[in-house]
Length: 293
Length: 243
Picture (tube, chains in turn orange, blue):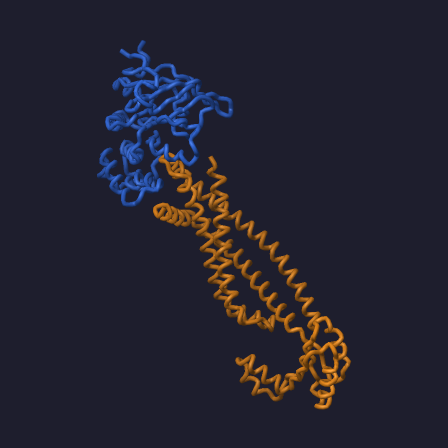
């Protein structure tokens, strides 16, 4: 068994480099596919997490004009509390909003001190008993002169759901096409490797090598292409992780940051599994169809 | 002085090779073998002669189970090759050593590695490969050239490398398909001497050849094929029919 694995690994390694140009081309297409795959998955996970976050926090946020007086605030508070749809009402003053911002964005806290005035509006954060009552409360708030704007969560949710659906449909189709292409490339690469070793295979058969000894080195070679492709992809992902993460968080704004580390690990495992999986399946198909005698 | 060879397989234990009514017809309708009966007892040395296209190579391909007979039975050491399970085919092949006219050596491997290859690819533990290789290289007289590559060797040395590779599994049957076809007469004799030594070690030898001098000089058993049929089977015979 050890002799078999050592032999297969050695031959897979030799085979990879014997036809290095083709092997590297297969690896490159593997990297392309895996990068695409992980990009899709990260985007999908980010969108879903954001959607969950938004759904879970269904509350109406109403931003007030800077001209709103304390009297306006008190009046609105009592009016809102009187509404049957509303469970809690929380008033966030301009100062509080600024403090919250400084806490949530410590990196730019210093900048805030240099601002001539506080740019953040005061707001009401209103939790609803039932998310579907959103429209009633939002309509009421929009009619108030002290209210500047109402954050339209329902619209955001439906837009996001639509985006997620489109992204996942397009993503799956694109991934299928790219995945099949990569599979085809692997099948061909390994086919060439088999042809290049036709003489050796003939000798192996004559001296009584079992099918496993003839076939598995090629499967290992395919797995090796997948493994190398996965490792390069993971390396690339780690390189672009920081800029992409900041891009994503500025894009989604509310992306739950604590999930990133776990997502990273899962994506790495997925990339590894997919790469090696396609490598093994492709080479197995190739070897099996060629050596079927 | 040639006398007819008995084809009765029960004469002396189980024959190493036994063909009963073997016919091989290819998909294109061409019959390569027609109703061939042949029995080779253990320790025999048989020359297989006949013009090109007579069916010698087909017979060899049937013996190593590269192909199956269309009709009839091909038995190796009493085992019906047609009923052999796919995974048992390699095991049977390890009991057969085979060499060809074109040596079939791997050009990028040394003599030692070419021989070791046969053991490596059959899962032999690393520790037992080296002594086995050294042993067969001594048998064929190539211990001194073990590190050379086939391209650095003469034709005779290349064929001896192939013989060493075929011997390394301790085969019971040694098949040589035109082993001297690419060699000059002197070197051919060296190869024949080697095959005779292998035969003396108790290995059954089947050699397909066109080399009339060798066949006639050795007076061994001669099986003649013509147009897919066994036309003669004589012991102590010459290359050409003497009657």
